[in-house]
Image (tube, rainbow, N blue to C red):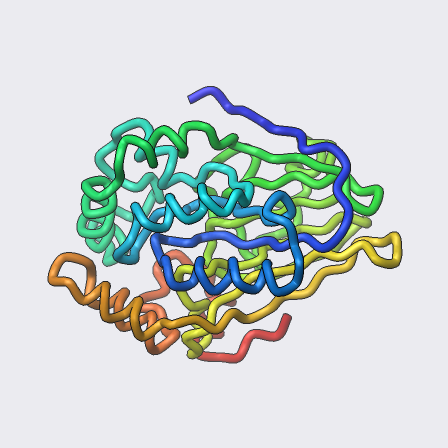
Length: 275
């Protein structure tokens, strides 16, 4: 697919950032309510992709995001669905538990999406750029060079730095890895707001998002936990088709495995995140 960037121009006011909805309709409903309570306009709400994923309501989730009017870029899952591919494009190790589970949830999601939802996903760009508090900001899924690249807090800055140069950006907002974090160096900021579709392997069923603010004419941000009806999400996932291990994670807040994680992040399993 040809890569496409949408430039939103200059933005002001609070911005709500999130990613990885993963077909979790209940989490998206709760986040939309947060945005409305804080008077954050839909155009100031941006998703880092992977709208579709492990949970039970892909069609309803895509339709709610479309109706809400929040912005989003493509995640690797959306890219694969648009192309009619046979897998999610996460580059899981063949034969791993993640690979095996993806053979359950991906075809399920593929079977549930309407043509209208697929047409909507086709309108999403690969990247979004905007100016905020006098800083150029770029939204990516994995990285600028690879949509499925896993970049974590422990990932060396030498692997992050080239993406600022490639986009001439001061701030990169990224997703894909499933864990919220931020890192600043050389007056650059890499910010992952986390995902709302699955817990962050921290032992809590709550999920994560972030809010940007420019009230001091400088960019400030905060990571926030989202409470939602995770018991209903779990109930809907226990449908005899989707992986039971992922349904259990919705409740426990603990990932079934840490195959994709570097050692530093793996060692933190079950620990309260310090952000």
